[in-house]
Length: 160
Image 1 (spheres, rainbow, N blue to C red):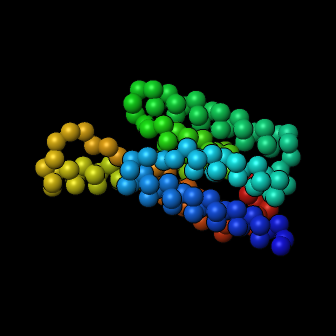
Image 2: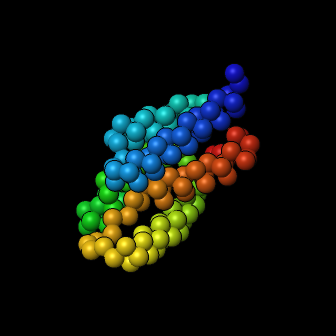
């Protein structure tokens, strides 16, 4: 198997993991630590298959993940985001160039806003009490899959 085919298989595996994250977040409002760990551990395999250099490429990916974790852990601390969501975003940051990840965050914000609006409408129709618990992993997964779709439409040589 050539490296380009292997890279596409890795992207496919990531997409499947994101679907699992979305479904479990919808059903149980929980994203498994094992799933997030699997996504994170797949990134170094992807780096090697993509021909990333240790410095600055791999270190840059780790740095991006640290920045994303720090920002979103702050949101978790104030109750604005779930822990599984923070870990999922951090794991995804290991897979994408920072500009691509920025695009993912914009798409995620739009998808999260639409999801929140739909949940508010549902709550109003059902006339339920209490706060809305938005399964934000769905928005993260949708934006991740959207981004993967865009990346895989390009040559694997232009990923980084």
